[in-house]
Amino acid sequence: MTMLWAQLRRIAPPRLPPRPPRPNRIFGAGSSRRAYGTEPNIPKEFLPPVPVLRPTLWALTATATIFLGCAAYDVHRDVRDLKRRGLLKNVREASYEDVEIAKHRGGHSSRRSSSRSSPSSPSKYYPPGQLGEVLAAYNDAEKVLLGFSALNISLLGAHYMALIQHFGHVPCFSPNYTLLTSMFGHTGLLHAGLNTFVLLQFAPQVAGEPRVFAGNGCHFAAFYLSAGILSSLGSQISSILPSRNYQYRRLVPHMGASGVISAFLAMWAALYPEASIGILFVPGSYSAQNFLLALVAFETCGLFFGIPLVKFAHGQHLAGLAIGWAYARYDGKKHVWRPSRKAAFAVMKRLHLV
Image (spheres, rainbow, N blue to C red):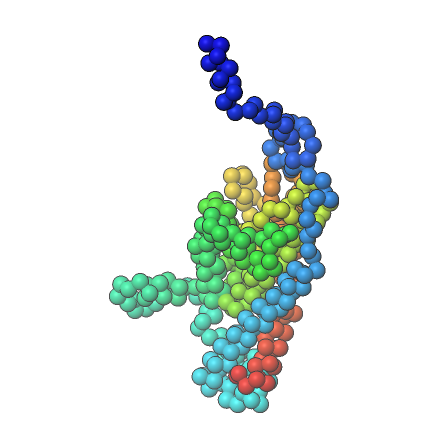
């Protein structure tokens, strides 16, 4: 028995050295358990830098391009309709003011009508025809809104696949174009459902408002996309704040249309300050002006000091609120959209595109 034990010891693998103790935290020792909602204890010097100048220039360029592109398409449609109706004959000698005078003299075309009248002669059951009858009850801006809402829902599962790199914006690493595409990505059904629900509560009223969009789908699309880009830029810039609550958001992808929703909410509150608004699961109602002030205070507190168990994109929300309020308060239709149309008409006329 002794000889067998000695032989087994000779053929047995050598005993491995003891495994070194594994640190309980990323940096240093200590307990690995931390309170829910706290951030990892990573020194700031180890965090990658957040680019600011390059995304800002890209966002401003993209916003200007979107407004000019939508304005050019809108002018092209106006000129085409006026020529077809015989209200504008010589476009080569006409000015932009002549186009505006002819448009108002002839009245708004049917594509911008906000009437809810149903078609007089319904067609046979055929899906495209039925869809056309349904959409005929909406103006252009509301059709664009429904299209964007459908796009949000259709891209719901994009973050589960490799497409997250195209529909989620990480401030440190993502390319600039995700400032635009991230507004169409959502983290789950609840996120997409709540965003779409809130968007459809406020945006339709603003879409038909004569002081802003007046049912113009091109104007609505330009503002929607631009507000999404600029609010994402606000989230990008806010990630460089030195507060512990925000310095780690540079490593987390953000997605969703909450910045656009904030813009429409602030625009609605600026247009209807005395209107009443209710909050889901919260009793009572509040005036739109007071609700907007309370929301700004909440987002500001969350941005600079943090709110326990709340991980909202406060920088994105504040940027959207500022964009929507300023666009309605300082008449973006007059100072942004009309100059864009005028510049687009001048370029298209010089290039013989109208």
